[in-house]
Structure formats: structure tokens, C-alpha cells
Length: 274
Image (cartoon, rainbow, N blue to C red; front, top):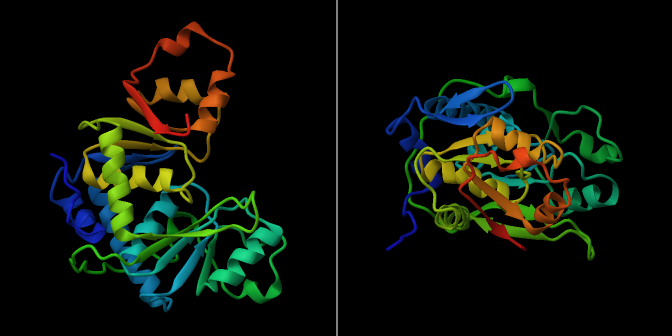
């Protein structure tokens, strides 16, 4: 029988230092991050968020692309009760202005000092994130364990292809349940390696990150999806499980066939929209 974990995300993060603290959990182009390093970085950034005046119930918009910094900020915010609204750096013009006007964020996190088409009234809300979140990394902030609550953790926006972008309200329980379900769908095993190509402003990306709190897996984080590099990345990183969306399958099926493509360690692909 499968049962959804009763622990909060904060409690799940705390367990990173209790079980296999030195195991690598996230791999980027330049870094290999252990479970304990992830936890300690989140604790320090939480202190930084408090120092700049953010508190429970505040909304923040993230214009960051896939990165370790974005993962740390995501966990730091939601465990403080700050509502995380990720929309990525590609959103511009009317769509971007509409979301900011609708959300009324306390801060807008960005790694760009100049954002195209952003009205001057929003510029004062931008908090420029330095590489490694160095300007938010402070002294350790103590975790306070609490049970999962059906509160708002994130608001994830649709693409806006059929009208104005729609904000999907996501609770902490939904985040944990989504990750847990991804574990069932992928038949997750200890030491599985997942290629995280999907944007972290999509539930498909967030659920893989959260699955890392529920299982002893390794996550290879990509800045973005590349069809041309896909199978090379699969081989290079010895990926065992692939998460997909239907559109990605269509793109991959159109690639020229190569004999070397079969040379991989993938045991299963799982997803939606096939």
C-alpha cells in the first residue's frame, strides 16, 4: 500500500541531514551538491529573506531560469510561508505586466538588472540576485518542524495561449502529493538518476525536485531542454528515468535515428500528454 507522507516540506528538508547527508542530490554544469549542503544553504538564505523584510503571506515573483539558486530560493520561500510565483525570464510585455499587476508581489527576484518592457512602477520591487545568492546568504536560521498544511505555497501560471495567463494555486499538500505520485509513476528506486530539463515554473519540474526529498535519487539539472543534445546528455549523465510531456515526445521522435541512441541506461520514461 502506498501512503502520502504526512511530513511537511520543512520536515522533509530536515531529514536530508539525518539520512545520507553526504550523498549527492543535485548536479549542475559546475557543481555537485550534497543533501547536507542543500539544507545548509536553504537555512542561510531563509535568514537573508527575513533580513530584507519578507514574511509569511508575502508574494514573490521569480524571473530566474533553471538553476541551483532558484531551487534554494524556492525551498527557502515556501518553508517561510512566502508564496512563490515563478514565471521565468522569457515572459515579457503584456503577459509579464499582467501577472505582476495581478500578484502585487513584495519582491521580484531577477538576475537581470534591466528587464525589457517592465513599467517603472515595478522597478523598485526588483531584488537583484547575485550569483550563488551571496547577497541573501546569512547566518543559519533554525528550522521549526510543523505538519503539512493545505496552505498556498505557489502560484503557477499557464502560458496564456487561450487568453490571459491563469494562476493555478498550489498548496504544500499538492506539492508533496505530486512528488509522491511521480515516484509511483516512475517506479523510483534508490540511486536513480533523473534528468531535470523542465522549467521550474512548471509543476513537472518542481515535482522532480521534491521527489529528491522523498527518495535517494540524483537530479541532473539542465538550464533548458535541447532536443539536439538530449540523448548525449542521457548517456553522459547515466540517466535511468526520464520525465516527459507529450510535446517533448513529438520533438524527440522527429530526430534522425542513430544507432548510438540505444546505448543508454534508461529503464523507464513517464509523463503525460503522450
